[in-house]
Image (cartoon, rainbow, N blue to C red):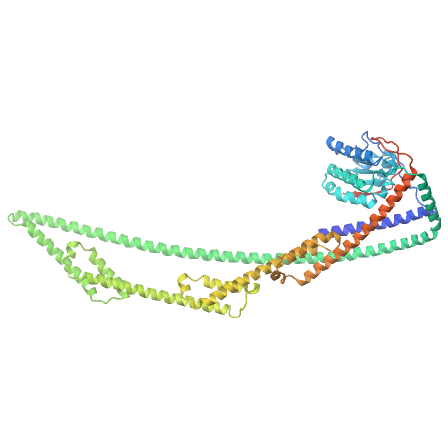
Length: 625
């Protein structure tokens, strides 16, 4: 949009400059023909005195913008031009305001002030000079060109020099840098257009012959020139009407395009907000599910550990109770043993005690047999694992002296336990296999229902194929072993890879489309200045592969090619006009050099630090910033 506004501004300025050129050409034709016209005496309108030039002359820095080094460099370039080109002078003057440099203290404009200053300073030998007048306070610059310098540096050229080499600096308040750049560009432009022997003397016969021819042509063509003047005025009026109409049309189209751009921007903003909200909701749901799952796992683990701790505490309590009972019985036995030994000193108490203890062990073994004997006759079964384990645990908790009197077949009990454990493991393995097969079958059915109508993979069904593949990928390794048809998975993977490649092609084509849209939409009417941008846009398309180009908009491609054709056509037209203009300028330059050589018999000397007393300027161009 900024480029379109800039182009409209440039078009308006070019139209105004063209109209002024037409009007100036009409006045020049009238002047050449010697027709009577009533005009205001422009020279007298600008007859006022300005501040005298400094001793430096070429750089009059009244506003104090330049450093000593900058000023020295500018002086060196200006003096070198004056010496090399026999009196051509470029003078740079800076002021705080135009009112400050007028002695009468009146408020004169940029053109009037620069006109008076050019005349008073006498810039350029034979009016081959340029004055660059820069006002800091008015934020305005004006380039006055001498009558003869107008042949080489036209008003449009002066304006273009300011636009290309100075305005960017001036808008950023880099005044010194802008003026240095503008002076250097102006000197380079003069050197590229004017030959160093522009004022070399030639024989008078050439001048006389040319004067005679000009007089003959002038007297013979007055009638024809009157007709040309009338046609030029009519053409100027028609051109103004067409230009005004085109400006209004362009403005309406630009407004429509601006509204369309804002609408598309709002639609994209709403779409992005929806996507962000959806992503945020999904993230919150996933986070909450993850937190719930971890919380449940932690609770289950904590409950199991609490149960284990409770069981251990109970076992410790039972052991302490048994220990207390054993200590009590031991104390009772020791007391009985002491009394008996005292009453019957001749009895072998060790043997009696041993027999008594053995009887106790036998009684405990008989009691243990009563507890575990019933389990030996049970069959080996997955449901009896805990029963056999408990019987073995009871046997193992008894002391070895009790165990030796146990008559129950402990080996058989151990064998029944191990066989029951094996049966339980086999049952659990079979149950797990059954669950794995069921999960694999369910995944197979889900994938089949999703992919039943998909025969090829492309960007449209990539998400569907990816969702189907995730169903298989989420299966455990054991569940995958029982998947009914692995050929289906191979086909699914192949389709998914094709769809992913096609999706990449589609996205690259869309990205290229967006870049081309951005470039093409920034161009209202294609001209030669847009050739580089349009070529860059075409490269975005050409860099796509054949499979990617099929997704590129044909309508956009046609529009791009049309813009390129318009730009090339405008370039060819302007190139031909530039060649014609260059040839015309070269012809005029040769004629003017011949005329000038015929009028000069010798080259006059000049001062390096002063003017040559030329006439008032022949034109110029100014800019505000």
